[in-house]
Image 1 (cartoon, rainbow, N blue to C red):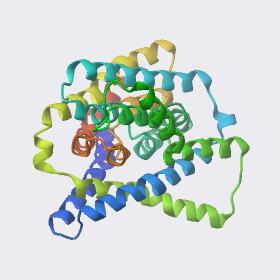
Image 2 (tube, rainbow, N blue to C red; image 1 turned 180 degrees about the horizontal axis):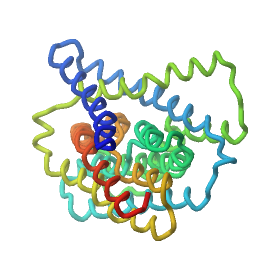
Image 3 (cartoon, rainbow, N blue to C red; image 1 turned 90 degrees about the vertical axis):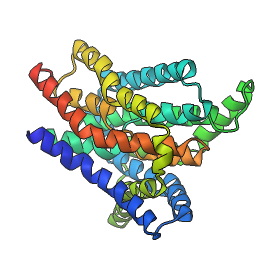
Length: 316
């Protein structure tokens, strides 16, 4: 029951902030211009600062576990390529493919993951390592699929798409922030209090502003028209991925906090930054928002169920 209450307290407030954004839009306080500007501001400023803050504060050398980081990276990669391959075969509407793939494999690891692990264990050592193993790949793979599947992209120009994807990766503010965060952590750079407080203030804007913008941009009727891919993506995100990779993690020897970190990586809701990247890279924002909302609402129950099963089996 404690785990269920915590899951509710973690996920439902996120959902309610989205609802607030939607309600403010219905009242006319927010409009399309706000959504556009807020998404661009989040993509280029607040989310990069948030990730830089979280990664740069980790003592990577002290806590580094190569096997764990490699597992997180390989599991994330396997999920991405399997989903993209499946989408190519089964999702006929090409305009939905990029949004579907990104929201199906990419978790809210940095925003929700660390808080979830810290609630269970008091501190989080493996959480930052999971972020190092998975989050850079989340962003690189997202740029790739959103570039290749963007609306208006013509087939048969793979060389041009590869070049565009590489340019987008190098220019992506989130990826740049991750690289700078890793460098800062490795060099153990200590910043003045003034800088730390400024960075922290900007970082704290990322999640609430992203959720408000997502809610304000949510198109209920349009989302209902895409309920089937939304439910399919939610099933993949919350059930199928952890069902495949948690037993593998157990066989390799991971348990305790390590297993919880892997659970969060695989089964946490789709991150709000999916919506921001989809909108900024000419992909389907309606489907992305629908998947983020649905997975956030359902995750309180699915994460609790996974924790209960893992405890029952003695894996955590």
